[in-house]
Image (tube, rainbow, N blue to C red; front, side, top):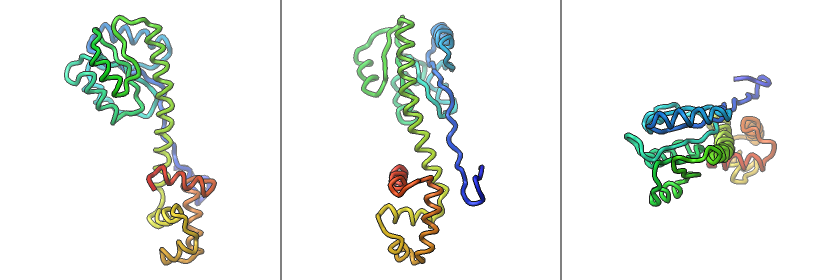
Amino acid sequence: MVYADSATPILSRPQIHPPTVFIVDDDVSIRESLESLIRHEGFDVKSFVSGNSFLEHPNVLGPGCMLLDVSLPGLNGLELQKSLVVERPAMPIIFITAREDPPTIVQAMKAGAVEFLTKPFNDDTLLDAIRAAIQRSELLVRSEARKLAVQRRYDELTRREREVLSLIVEGLLNREIGEELNISEITVKAHRGRVMRKMEALSLAELVHLAAEVGI
């Protein structure tokens, strides 16, 4: 951890990785064709033969999207989607399938898929869908990274500082906080200053907003 001075730590921010397109399809010819097309557009690509093999891949914080076949060995595409909605909400999914099945399309789109393409599909249509999905993912990842950063700041607070923060959010004055915690007003002011520095809040309004982000 790096320190700006002897008292105030600068908390590390979550590392955000560059955009990646994940391909999950058990057809090797489809995977290789998609990899070549997408890499040519400058995106990083990672391919998997099944949903289970993808889930074994470590999750990293970074924008991206998934090209997901509906029919897969083991977990099918819809089952994998259901898992990702919870575990990797910043991962937009573009379904690809060999045959059009309206009930499956409806189910996938209702669950949050951003596109549903039937093989063979136009390269430009696919690339446009990928760009839109990654743009959406970038917004989601930035939001997720902010939440992680704010939570890390909160985790740096001592038990007493968290108590003071909770009472600040309730709107209590320093004198009232001191009475509530049975400490002096001067001590409350010291805790309050450390809370402001650790939470990196420039104002009371910002501190209250940050506290709300961690559920206070």
